[in-house]
Image 1 (cartoon, rainbow, N blue to C red):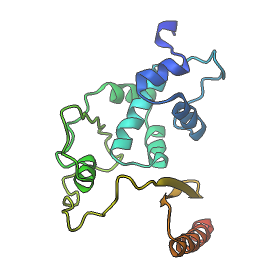
Image 2 (cartoon, rainbow, N blue to C red; image 1 turned 180 degrees about the vertical axis):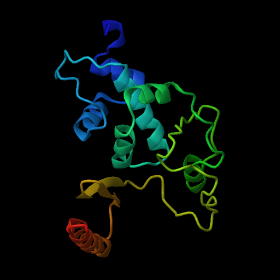
Image 3 (cartoon, rainbow, N blue to C red; image 1 turned 135 degrees about the vertical axis):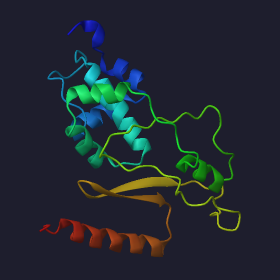
Amino acid sequence: MPDDDRHSLTELADLAGVTPRTIRYYLGQGLLPSVGQSGPGARYGPGHLARLRIIRRLQIEHLPLAEIRRCIEALDEDAILELAGSDAPAPPMDTALDYLRSVLGGVGSGAGDVRHGVSVQGYGPAISGNAPPPATASTAPSVSPLERSQWERIVLSPDVELHLRRPLSRSQNKQVDRLVTIARELLGEDQP
């Protein structure tokens, strides 16, 4: 393969619109194939870039990484290159971003918001216009923009995570601890 088609980690990250750390994570999770060499001399081919583009499109459809991995594993290299090069379908008019903006009091999607999706037959959810209605002033949560919060990720099993926005009250912390204990017990049981 000519060296022109191969990229360093930072070049690949720039082309795909992700960070090098994200690429390393995807390599560790089996979403991207190993290049056989690690370190600054590692070179990534067009298949890596194609997979990164497909991953990004499927994430926009709100697929978890475990499901994305299953989707990509079911495709051969030609299908991956074809899907990555195909035009993305038009985004739905009622997107999750529009909903979040309405909840937070922002304006709808601007001209600069371009979303890319991918249509993989048999894989991934279809995004429909069945999004919840935008929140009104009476139903929107009152979150002060000055209030500081931090998200915490708790791994319950290899493919299941719980995301929490901190800080929580003392009683909420106790409830979360109980929830995590119960969830880990349930997820740890052998499935039939």
